[in-house]
Amino acid sequence: MKVGIIADRLNRTSMGVGAYVYNLINEISKINRDILYLVNYEENNLFLGLDRIIIKNPFEKFSKKLPYYLWHIYLNYYLITKKLDLDIIHIPENPTIIQKLKSYKKVVTIHDVMPYLFPKFYHLALRYTYRFLLPRTLKTADAIIADSHNTKLDIIKYFKIPEEKIRVVHLGVDEDYKPLPENEVEKIKQKYNLNYPFILYVGGLAPNKNVSTLIKAYYKLKKKKFEHKLLITGVKRYKYEDIFELIGKLNLQRDIIFTGYVPREDLPSLYNAADLFVYPSLYEGFGLPPLEAMACGTPVITSNTSSLPEVVGNAGIMVNPYDVNGLTKAMYEVLTNKGLREELSKKGLRRAKLFSWRKTAEETLKVYEEVYNGT
Image (cartoon, rainbow, N blue to C red; front, side, top):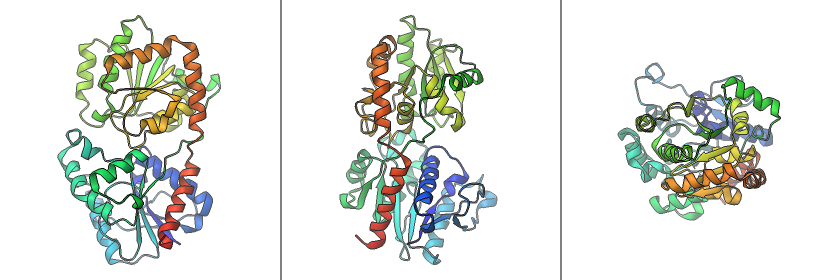
């Protein structure tokens, strides 16, 4: 059995789906590196010794001017007309290879179906890309991997895909996310000038992340004379202007700190330094940040929607993401109740141990074997 993972996402980013692709390849290579081939991943300093298949991108010279999905259209054509020495092609991000691949079995990972549930959050091109390409990607796949049972149910509901075609494989959490010594936490505080207690949010600025509700709840919390600041990490993605207008309206410019992009190596220390992690997202295909926070022993408040209850279980406090007062109350209770914070920390650490990238890799290998053997 030879499996080619479309790994070009790693040429662009190691965050989000990039983290999934990196950790999946890294762990599978430890279990059975002989079966693995990386398709269009050109970096030579990672995954040394793994076989690579480079398919030349004819749009490379124009990549900044043309939509990236044109490369995926070409990749469709290439895989249909050329025969690589592979048995399985694994597409680790939503609508990429839409045709039935006669020469290979096709496995696709679906992380979420947000463009269907929240179309107004996305620009027109992406909406139509998902609306027309994702159904074809799903129907022509030999097996579909969903990040969560919630995503599996969404795929069945919105695309009428047979349940037996979908396997749920949860994501994992890196071993770096763990309780850290005080001296390491102090280093990160100094690096980011964090000389105050703070509430942490990790996840970037996008409408589905529901940061505006967090800011409104934090504003109400500040009225109770809390000294905590709100630390927001991540890049500006799209439709984020309302967030800054709201901060100005509520006069919170000195209380809400934006770090922008935070290197992955800094995140475990930031989680450790926070008194509370809050993640009021409207929808997640899985939701890695709450899991990372739990693995660090940081108390978690998150939404009671989509896959988040599936990930957090009873180890965090869950609230309606539209309920500003409910979120304020939850934050107040955690920050004022030391016993509750300690209980959530212990539960979070136990819960996080249920998820690992090793387990993700082992379960993904089972999917490959089932597809290869036709079972």
